Length: 324
Ligand code: BT5
Image (cartoon, rainbow, N blue to C red):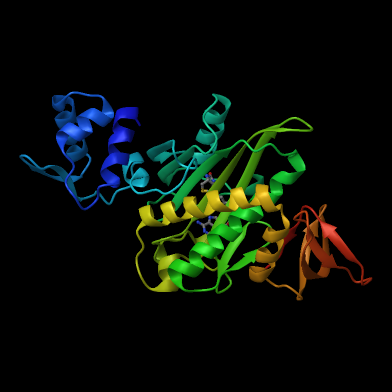
């Protein structure tokens, strides 16, 4: 987004109901009155409806409903997360694009959004079906000063932010299946993919990918996931504004990220366990290529899953697949 345009959006979004004079815009943005008029025409081309009244100024009457850098930026109440937004109608994967931008030096908190992904991916190169614009598919570049083995904690942090978003917007209580699945009524509505690049003792950057099934109807899901996937719309019985959900998610994530650096992981652990799926239940899981059985007891203070084994010992598990 050009910085003039970014400043204009910021200015207009803080004067949402009243008129703002062309002179004020011109002064604040340090551009001519003609340039202000041109910027307004550009916004109209993007789908904004603008009322221009002589001696009063400009006022935005309606905003476009389609996702764009501008519409997500409009009214986004974050300090750093999503200040840089890159939006594409189609990408192979936001994850790949965000990794590329991170390597090129993009800022901490850059968000890459795609309406559709042709080759969205999950963990271990599994497929993430997202070749439709019913969902939210985005990746966030973070540059936290942490050691690599703290990275998985961010997956849990993001999962809680998604769970809280669901609780507030859908008025339903989701469950979190360790490490990265968000479920409603035992069906997967969201997945998180955390990738990182770093040295042994320091992360260079992290890319957190988030996929939310928002406005899907059940028949939109591919046969492979027909039985296990669901969407916000299916579960809550209404259609959602993707822009509002993205904004709310980014606001929650920024807050959670900041809290993590002030309070550490302990507050994350308690919140996570409130949503934890199958806690105190016996599950089968695959760990180091072996199928095992145990009872999920919660998570450890570093994010590892705690499982009570058949020998009644509680073991921390750092990498495993919990079967359904
Ligand atoms: C995940 O992996 O759940 C991580 C998903 C992350 C997706 C985001 S979208 C934005 C960013 N760009 C990307 O390319 N990826 C990220 P995993 O735990 O490995 O789960 C993958 C499994 O979930 C698949 O094997 C399917 O069984 C199932 N699955 C695939 N697509 C799904 C969907 N749309 N809804 C529910 N389940 C799905």
